Image (cartoon, helix red, strand yellow):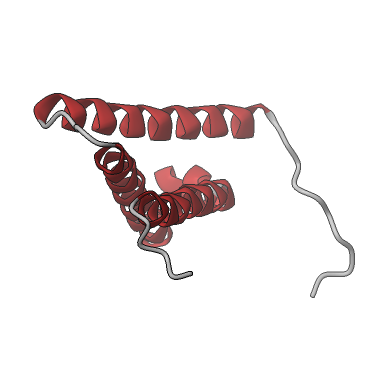
Length: 117
């Protein structure tokens, strides 16, 4: 344990990293939803929720894969050290995406009246 607590120091690089991360996740989710709804147009509300479930689920899986690969990549090449330094931001965003996926699953069951009373 360290002697003193030091809060996260925000700087320009972290703001840029977070902006790129949020833009990439938003474009993935929007792009996934647009492509799937164009190829197979949903007809009912559970089908719309299903698209959202799959978009957030696949995004969370890809994010987890990237987060877990940052450590080994940083050992192989120093180019990946900024990602290692900001991995916590990636993890927090992953948690929010995974929670949205779980909430969408509960909503899907609620719309179909499949939740136990």
